[in-house]
Image (cartoon, rainbow, N blue to C red; front, side):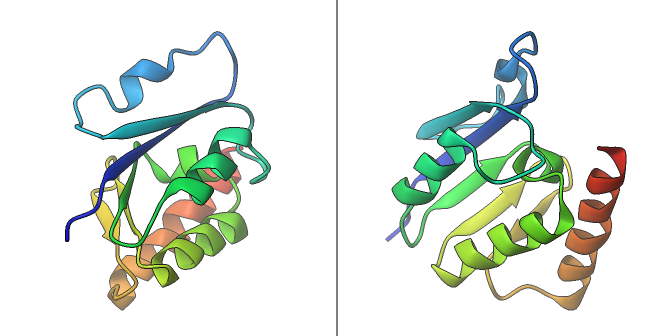
Amino acid sequence: MKGQRIGYIRVSTFEQNPDRQLEHYKVDKTFTDKASGSDTKRPALEALLDFVREGDTIVVHSMDRLARNLVDLRCLVQKMTKRGIHIEFIKENLIFTGEDSPMANLLLSVMGAFAEFER
């Protein structure tokens, strides 16, 4: 059974346009936060985590939209993949399934570290 594709969008300010992040990607449902990515206490992210089920794929424009902190990013990815949920990062062209290669995990760490540094 193939699950749903669930989009997650995050912008930092109300002036930013969230529509461009997933405008060319088909998703069945979207959750959008207008909040800082410095921690995981975001209403739409929490709703997304409650909504997704095993077999679903969470589609995010880039790693820094999911988290701007390496520890939070790794924790979110591991938490979801352990539940059988896939995570697709469009910009980085990476999909995490829980059966990831060492290279994919290295890229997650390196790119997540850059996102934290940029913040």
